[in-house]
Amino acid sequence: MDKPSTSRAIVVSSKGDDKGDVQKKKKPMDVQPTADLSAHFATDKQFTTREKFKDWADVVANNLGFTTVILKSDNGNNKRNPFVTLGCQRNGEKKAYVNKKREATTTLKCGCLFMVRSYHLKSGGWTVSVLNGTHNHVMAQRQEGHIYAERLEPEEIELVREMTKNRAPPRNILSTVRRKYPSTWTTIKHIYNLRQRLRLEVRGERTEMQQLLKCLSGGKYTYNTRLCRDTETISDIFFAHPESIKLFNLFHIVLVMESTYKTNKYGFPLLEFVGNTSTEQTFSVGFAFMTAEKEDHFIWALQKCRDLLRCADDVKVVVTDREGALMNAVEKVFPKATDLLCR
Image: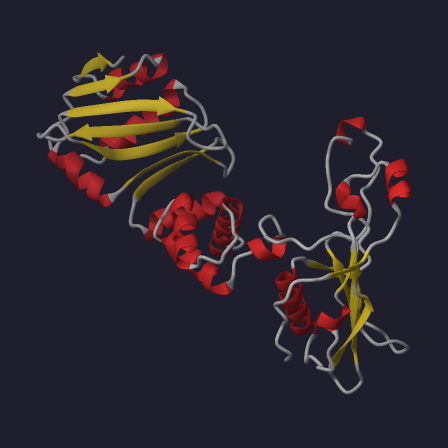
């Protein structure tokens, strides 16, 4: 394969006179000189696959300061050979929207005419043909903001994958990628997008609830579910880590409860159980997702938390917020406990 050229494009000519430019009142980016890059894509090399041709063209274009996109492709038939046509990402014109609210938007498209095509020969190779090697805009000196330049390389993807498995936050992942690969132009958005794709790969065809139950089972959590009446839909779920259960059985005198609904995108109430050690350290006992903050839901969750105790002693002090349904549930599940209110 030919080695991609790393030289910058040289302006060779300019179209349009000054008078015409002033009359049309175009922005400077619309009246840029024309650069001919045909020589950079002229090669006698034949590629084994269409993907290898595109990878080669992407590298050449990136080194010159622009990004290629697929303008047209055809798998061919009995009368014509397969081909693929690549162009500059600034090919085409800005669309005129009827909605006036979109008139303030901008676009990279400026009618760039650059096109290069590859045909599939009967011999099996893919040949390269430059249809139009000119650009009507200057090449970008920095590739920040370009799709090709910002995308993650395979080794960077593997690094993000490993750090995601280790539960590293996205900002730490991005800083590590930039420190290990100084030439990268990737952004935090690409990190979030890749993490989302990795989660979908792990989940497969399972639903989110099925994936949650799988993770709880794999982590050896103790969990219980409650179904809606006459349906197979889960209405409430309680879960606790094995180490948390051990601590709860050692330090069960004080139990703090807090219910919130701002911790997940579904808006489901989350009831958190927190214990206190003899050294005034707190630890999580368990969690319960519920479909509603009603008394029967709280009673079920509190009963599952109480079932974690394997000793004869019971909880002596319960600390809650001013949630009426939760306070009523505490009186029924822990009738002998002292109920305190936290501010």
